[in-house]
Structures are given as structure tokens and as C-alpha cells.
Image 1: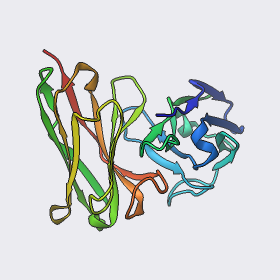
Image 2: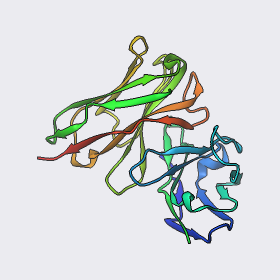
Image 3: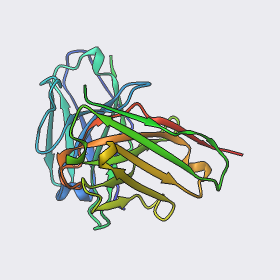
Image 4: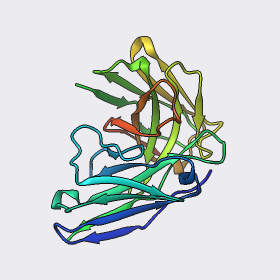
Length: 109
Length: 124
């Protein structure tokens, strides 16, 4: 199966903007979805499709894609945004599989 | 309230079997594809298996293919994962997750509802 690559850790100053990226061949054909996971909690979907936010997700979260890279942008990061973030997408090798990135730990300074 | 509740986890010896269940409520279960996703202690998320609304389309990760079987009973609003020939590397918290799209999976690949997970520990 194909892979999705994420930076292991990213930091951002409180109130600033941060971009978390996800790279993989499958992203040339399929959109990524993004999940936020806080310690001891289940993941929460924050972005899916071209740039869709489920109900209840703040509009400071947005998504974009270019070539083989998908990005999650948090505009005006808050302390409560400190969490692990995962991308996922469909595998592009024709194996009918879903793949997750390795995750990015976001620290809000 | 939309809810997924997993059960069936526990401590099991290598080579043995275990069956996980996921009880759904608060939404029309038989409209949606469903998935199992696992997370080993201190590690990231790993997709395990997915099943379409009518069980007509099923997929597995390479790591579990041939050992795990996903199924669903729409009359009981339940999803299952039969795990055979368990290995130490199968030790993880297993989540049940609802696909955001009605019908087939592999359309949007977005999981909008997650359970709290059930822990599976494979050890002698």
C-alpha cells in the first residue's frame, strides 16, 4: 500500500498560523481527510474533501491540496489546538485500502 | 445522540482468536459504510478494515488480510471484527468508525464518528 508522510512535530506561537502537511502519491488523485486527537481521546474529524468542516469545527481550521501534498492550516492557533493531527486518504495502488499518515504532534507555545 | 460503543477486547495469547463488536445508535446504521481503525500504544492510527453499507464491498490492510474478517448485522445495528491467528503486533486500541458517506466506502475516506475503542492485548 502507498504511504502518507507527515512531519513528526510542529510548533506554533499562540495566535499565529500553522500549516501541517501530508505527502503521498495518492493525494494526486484523492483528497485527504484530517483528524485531531488529544491524549486519551478518540480522533475527531476536522477537515474532509476539498475543504469541508464537520459541524462544530471552528473555521480557523482549513484544508488545501496541491500535487502530492495536502495541508491543514490553523489560522490563529489556540491552546486547545495542541494535539496530534493525522491525515488519511485512499490508497492509490488499486488495493481498495485506506491509509493514514504517521501523525504530527502540534505544540502551541 | 450518535454513538458507537466497542466491546470484546481483552488479553489473549498469540495464535488465539477474538471477536470485537461495535454497537451503533443515533443514526441509520444501514445507510453508512463502517471501518475498524487501530492504534498501538504510543503509536499512530492504522486503518484495519472497511465494509460498505450492504457488505457488498470489503477491504483489509495488508497487515491483517487473511487473518481478520469484518462483518455487519444491519438488523442489530452492529459491526464486528473477527480476529484469528493473533500476533503480538496486533496489540492496540481498536476503534470502530463511521464513514461520512452513505453507501460505499473509498468515496470520501472521512470518518466522522468514532467510538472510544476497545483494547486488545496479545501476549503469552
